[in-house]
Image (cartoon, rainbow, N blue to C red):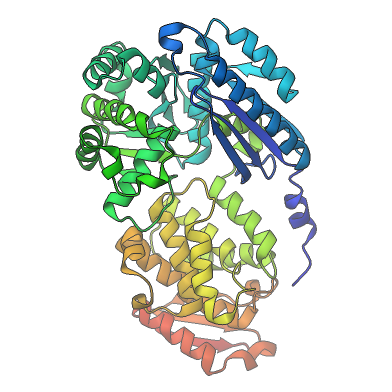
Length: 507
């Protein structure tokens, strides 16, 4: 494996791990990230369902048992962070501690226990951080962010990197359960009454995306995937059609949750809250008429980290950044990935094939990921690369994009025959991205027999389209590489494009 260059070594210096602790109304969660980067990768994630917000809406106090469970969790998290060498711990508390009369006393005890200052988030601040989390985790977001916790719901408008003024309402799962006394009809009246006081958010949602943040909505999405036998079990970026979503949400409200497929994946403590999450999301869909529901695994915690990045880091593409880090860690010669990106750029310009900005960034990421499977057994490189990419911890990527990236590298190793891969992942990509994946793979299959994954070669062997023919140019000293294998791959590329293909050797 070629040694990392100076630039690559610099990019790998992401510092020591950082952590967030979210003291929520339902759970207390620790997430430790690899470092402070544009695409933070979790290396440890643990939650304890303490139920701090249970009964706060009616009693005005945090239950003593819930406080004790939360303090035990914080003591454990402190030890874990010390063991992992965490450099910075960012601790925040939300609705339950904010609304309870004994909240200040609890926060004092919590700060002593975890050894850190705790930021008590206002409703507006919580909404802002949730929106920043969506900005961090989605490519060009445009819609309304809805963060449903145990004690409250925050709504905020987001477009690109612009975040609007947020609003908070007491519509968390525990709050609804408490205020309604367990009555679904009363809970529905509470939801409708509260949403009527925020008409501008629902009016602005029409025809845009609703970004659903929070554990209860992620649990509903997991059950929706199971009901549809969906092939990609990744929550972030999972999209639900509103019309289909209404039917499913109504089902969740009406049936015993024990009968739902894959209900075992939802914790016992969260199951009673599913119906309240379904009611709230159903009402938002009916009143706001969004074009789609996008599930976000990014929220307040990731918003805190994004906010602390400098301006240059915030402007980075999170997908390309994450792909670049994986390229540095796993490729034989990391500089080859960027050269492959430039090499395919020149080819695409000569071909004149139009690309959207999103398709260009996907191709960039695919070039960086092209060689991450080289350590696997040759018979399994395609399969392992597909699984690593399809299920990887990437941000700024929808499920169609995941399928494209995975297919590009699969076909690079396994050949261009589309029948070699499951029809379900091809359907996720869609026809256009599926064909783009085969084209990029065909280019890679020409590049690697010449460059053998080493940097410094591709800039010397341009591949371009000229006068209806695909031409690969080789320097005279590399002419011996034009064997049957390379010629066969050039013919496969030409066949894919319905063009003649040839190799020119200088001199």
